[in-house]
Length: 322
Image 1 (tube, rainbow, N blue to C red):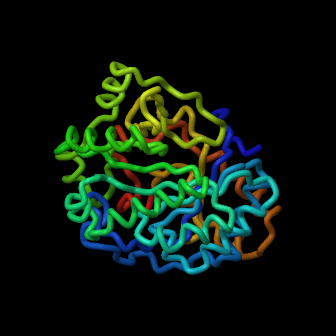
Image 2: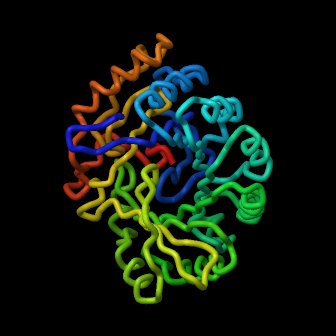
């Protein structure tokens, strides 16, 4: 089992298949995607070497992320191969949903078990303003199709201070009849959004207090769950999750690592830099790579340093792997 010096076990890998993204979200890539890392990127075969190495170390869940993973042409093949890897019990994807209606059936046939779609507003005009794309109805249709196929579906929404009450009202109305988990994510500071962060950051505990006061109750965590605390309510078909990276105990339940599209191991999403592994990955020996990863775990810190404003070399939220 993959462990660190703080007694935490790691069941969950976030693997970035591309840095590219086709959205221009105001808090992440307001000017659109601009390539800044010109190092070689993982091939589809490299990705399988990484997954097999992590499977040897007890990883049960693999999330394929970006950038925007649907832009990676070989994604259906990668899903299929990851799903067939011994030890991997769940394959998930985080996407902006732009291509979802066209690709969700292919992803399902390949073995996709869980889908996360990023939607920051259910108001079509506001969504278009936030992302640069007027495609919310199509994304919602894609979600309906995913649910019909039996894919566990979650929606990620970044919390913004301005207009938060109106957005929450729309989301709550939607959850009454829609069996998805809506995960509110605190806006995080990165190297390129400092001013935006200061003016828009909204603490998730304000939402959490409202939930507890109105009859929502926490759902027990599974070993391979992500960082969200999930809540359910008997009057709602959907659930609500909260991801609050600025909470004092946020890192205590860390169970996930990230590998970038360049083959760097990120022991923490906000570490100063990733650890280069591409040369070892391209040897194609998953057992040797697994041993290398275990040795690197000694460098994992007990906590991030977001409270001190240290965001490492993370330029934007897209670089966090979705």
